[in-house]
Image 1 (cartoon, rainbow, N blue to C red):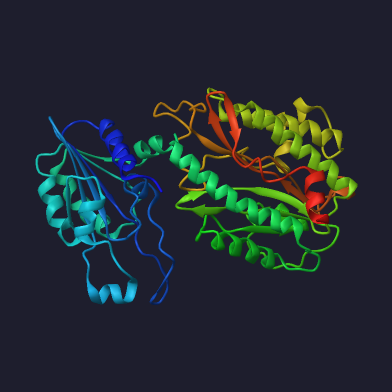
Image 2 (tube, rainbow, N blue to C red):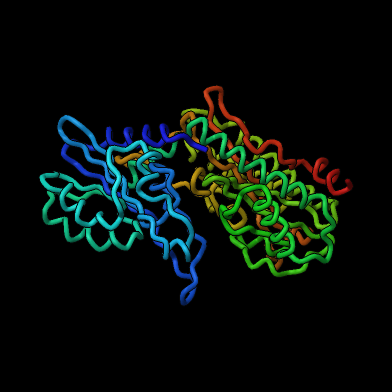
Length: 427
């Protein structure tokens, strides 16, 4: 777990980014209704969690920056026996005062009146414009007339979230180690005539068994041509011998995500055509990972991945013409339509800013964690490609940390070579 001192440090870093005579107000995520009076499992707002480490709803964090001092105030749900009977125990004000390294703690019932008091004589109010907290959405617009300006604080928090601490990296590694168990189990078991959802259930069982109670995202188990739907989550088809399965599955461990994709044969053995495509994607992935280092731009990784995949597809007869002409006409985009990767952390797709306020691309920095995930997607009904490749979709995805020496592949332990995958299937 992350120590309270680290959350306090983050709050101090955020306060340094705003001018004097300002106030920051953040609210916990809203409880989401599934249907009628049943709720989805609660998941805290990521920015709120980053600054507090608090998992309960009906909570607020207020940061005040005055001329000569700063102040942090926390509001939590007070303990009520009847409410706890239905929804579980609450931390309460007394324990919150001991736990959180803040100046003051109050009941959430007092938030409305206290905020009116705190906002007096303040120049600027900062809050997350995308908040779904109902009380914040209600009262903030009513207070804006008393302020010189209202600003969105989300981007400033996301700039902080871009660089992971040692403890955050450790939690991501813990999440990956759980995902590793699930991916290796999926490679080992007999899969012929099983259904996609049975593999999905296997992953979710292993995740939860090992303490990853929440999904980082809905597991993708895409057999055969289903792999050519990028966000395929129906997972309801039978797995057939001779086809590949694209499995995109990661978990969330103590609020930190893993995001791993492996593509494996249903019967445990790659065909010649499958090998040709798989080795192309794997070669591209390894070359792009090797490029990761401080100062490199994501756009550079993207361009190189597209160039290498285009060259490979020309060699295999999927595209025709020179690399330059194919890329100019964007012919490769039909079979590799997505980005080479994204940032990850508390969210599987961390909203770390990709550009500065001046719209300049932010290069990679030490402490960033991102995915590298090239793919090739060849629909079954595409008559423009060789018949032997139709209906095959392959993606290989790893989680990469930018280091002072270059990079560290955090998910290196999850096997991905043809030899390793086939050996696990035999075992």
